[in-house]
Image 1 (cartoon, helix red, strand yellow):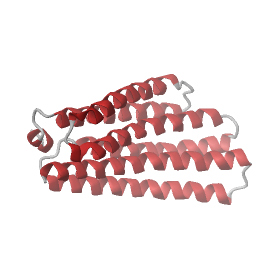
Image 2 (cartoon, helix red, strand yellow; image 1 turned 45 degrees about the horizontal axis):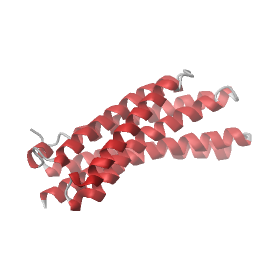
Image 3 (cartoon, one colour; image 1 turned 90 degrees about the vertical axis):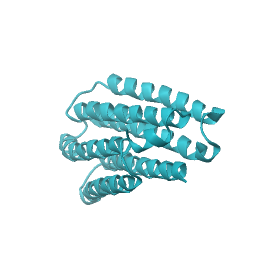
Length: 211
């Protein structure tokens, strides 16, 4: 039995936190669909369906938190935690939509975006798997260890994002291509940032419960 299951056994907080794991499942599924879009699929509906499912669940979770289902000292952190994990899925949808909308305008840019985004989605998958494992830790010290691993993944993403921005500024591009490269770079960065922020919040919630 993981740490949170032991300290939240039978509580509403435990139920909410367990449902938070499902939000990570949705994010992993969304990332897999995003990879298909990057590889030339124009079908946004599957990603839209995952986003809608995540939005429905986060609405129910937020209502549970604010209705008094959790201890008062955990309400703010729980609300932020639920929304951070939902933001991951929302941003993946926005990223997929941006890629589809631009595709075909500039083959060179499309190829460049495909190359960089496949590297970034691999990092997203790594960060999400680490985030999921944070729900199963045995010791509070493990939370910090996983959090630092996610931070390292996010920093790898920063390197790719910066290289994309450098490319946008140093290459002779029309405004739409320039904006598109910047936009997808920042959206991908936001996803990795949200994974790191969610990891911080999990650690904060664990510390609050233990104290």
